[in-house]
Length: 256
Image 1: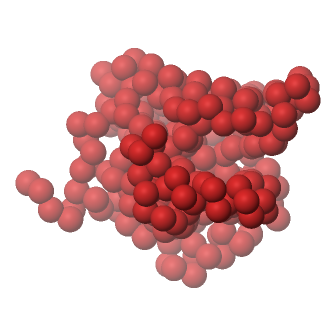
Image 2 (image 1 turned 135 degrees about the horizontal axis):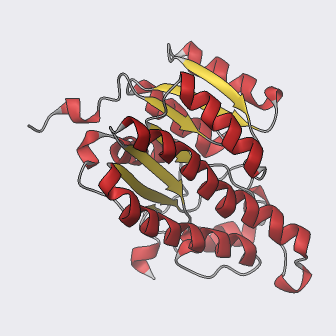
């Protein structure tokens, strides 16, 4: 039966990587307000403090985990340990990195930092969490953070676009492979949101004015715009949805 209970996440544990700020923090807050207990990760304890305080101020059960998703061995061990005491029902692969640079200036270090965080890190987080989900036999939901660069080419963002296009392919492949285990794998593709990671773009007023003109809704994304989509994909309301990517872009992709 359809009703608000389909969106209720009470009793579920949600892990949000890179949840210390920006989109990750907004996603953690949205999941928590719908009843989920939250674990957010960051690369330092200092990075976790603000988000944990904000979640707890809203009455949300929250914990933090220091994690660098680029370290595959450490990530696998940490998530296995966490899952053993705090079974993970929802994973949001939000940890991400960008370094805007002309392609002729991209070196191996830049490439590896971006691709290892956005693509490799997301895969091995998903793998570690899926092991627990499969073993418990009740499935779960994995939501990857894709991007408009999963669909369109953006100059000076080639490693980032490559990682996010790969993440879209990974979402589709894992959804097909893990559906029989009850694990749904979907993604969202945020459009133009002003965050610490994307501030370099918005500092260019000409760029910001020109880009705004391309968005049918006439505004950039707000942090509150991502929560509903993630809650939906994590919830029983999306029980028959897997392998999909939902753009959150004010109509940008539809208009080009």
